Length: 419
Image (cartoon, rainbow, N blue to C red; front, top):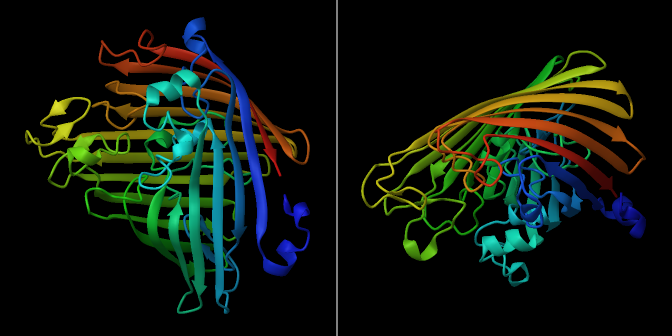
């Protein structure tokens, strides 16, 4: 906690200041020595995309938590319903290599401080440029009507999928690197979400939320059509098991060539091109030491096939794409400060669409990751891991090793410092 800077702040106002520094070292067995001097040589493995040392991010939060039994994009909570109004907010500032992918179109995407990389992705890759981003800027309110209504409005992460950023201490992410499923999720949205508890018994609690947003990673939606996101979230009363269903759906094409928001969307069309993604995920404590998490996802981008519907990768006449995946992780809590985890994933992207710009390979990715988390001190967590990925699909596609390989082994050591 960083409130030692202002010792009375949280007590008198409820405002909390905290943060995390995420840094580490990574290598793979496919890149050359020359390639390693630039960035993104681990791709399409995400999370730690650079080899050698990487400052993934410095993330600072200034927030006033909401006093509610339902926290939008997060969870319903057991216990009696709050009877008082509550208001809160969150500001999240980020600096580091991950800032390149955490920016929002129409907001921080083209801040001058992020040039030249904001306008030249190849320059950012060569120079391993760090970016500034402001992925959290929202207000919250709790209204004690009916079952209790929680409202969130602003720019925020939508909380779709099993792995969600950032790596705060209570996050469900067990590894330094991310799944392919994580790459396909929207990083930020802007709009309004309303949530409430819809069931609360002695054994379980369930909540739901629904929102209207500008689109994927977007504050200035250039197709003038909103997207809808929502979720149903179930928890056991002891919070030792949960299941979430989450979705986002809406038109995601660029309406005109004078405002192409790539890579947020790689389609250009004057007609609406509907995109959707669904995730069913959950976590269960099997006993005091063993736990398991899993996710199944499906996504689809519609395409009308007309000559005026243009894919910036494949050209005119885009007729649609779909993708799906499954991933699961198993964790053994050996002792309070040490846990071991294993993860397996299969991700199918037959049209090479969903992972853009990380990859445009047509086929399926599989990966196995082994790692541990060691709580070295009260503030410092260490997460080393080894990972092996392989690709099957189009014979001409080699997504690893700068287009040379269909498999890759990666080793990463991550340090997380909380303050």
